[in-house]
Length: 117
Image (tube, rainbow, N blue to C red; front, side, top):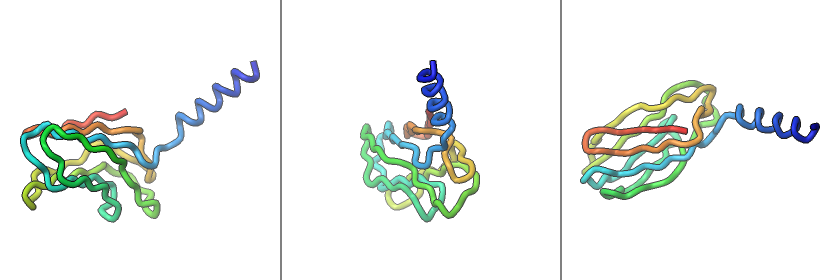
């Protein structure tokens, strides 16, 4: 019984622990090759993916600036031929930590779809 109670307590507290670097999977379902894609909470610490071709996927993680403990949305900026193709905000973080473990981002012809876990 004590062992079961210990396991329940560990699971409870670990599920409440904030995530500092959620994983990213970006999929390019458009017919465009993107020069670069930036995902960030603070422009000082972007995650950058270079040359994402059509039907290609990239994996990474969102970096947080530990000196900033604020709230906000994640930002994504997509560049094509040196210009901004699309930019959006998605999700939410609080106190400098993520509420999500993972983001799946799909870039379509004219839409950015984001799902989170």
